[in-house]
Length: 401
Image (tube, rainbow, N blue to C red; front, side, top):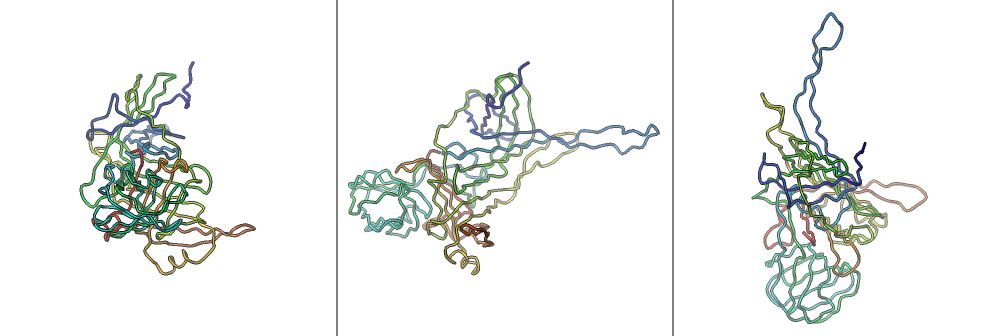
């Protein structure tokens, strides 16, 4: 007798065309995972009837549900569709400038790009964006990942993510592009995505498909050392069992896994050289809409507000972060995760433009003192077109989306 093995299981997902229309066939994506567990729990109702035989008269089955929990190591392109779904906006190609003459200057940690006329803000560049230059006459600066620390009309201040020096001087015919694609929780025009997830056990030729799933929570974690991780929770309506693969030939990504060695965290526009980790959650309180008379299946999956919160930790070297907390100062957080330290590495970046720190608790011991800074994000009503930040609670950029 063959027993199913996890190493031979294929986890896959595909966006549905509509609620109630499960996905099939090709065009899906393989779900890179450490673990992927989808279940179909039910409500049960035990009878309270009293009988002279002194025994229970049974249990009835009520509402069927679907819950999914995926744990993986973060990589470019792999989870972009699901991130876009929880933010309720599809990833879109980033903005770019026209070919201009720009002057490189500044110093490490605060390199600058200056133009003589026009406006980077009008072009749509934002703090937290990762840009690359192309076509410039200073060729050493082309096709490298630059993280925008701040941006005004004529000047972008940035960090070179590869850590190498930037060549100063005037560069003609230079085009700047927000690399890959970007999404953010929008103010209007929200998408409402449903997915079919499949767990296919090839060694025993058995399939479980879970239909009408919506993404309810995504957790991202960057430890002091090790790989960046992502956890995804889904809520759905029904499960179907079968004997053959339903999401045939799902596409697998082969992008590099992000790790702590190459991570960058900006707090209030300043690179944190003593940060030891960060984790944050995006959630929308997704839940099965519940039972109706005459059916054991919910009719929809409902969601609430998009909420973002988390904690970052840092070695205690100054009171800068404590002052932000004490003064209840609105600040920002940007997290960039790269696959390696090359100039054009794949990356996933998150920007939270408006947060408040809600604590600064230290630890203790015969070691470096670490403080924990929990934070909560809110809608950045002051951002938007022509402003250096997005009008959103969180944005995400993916180099391979």
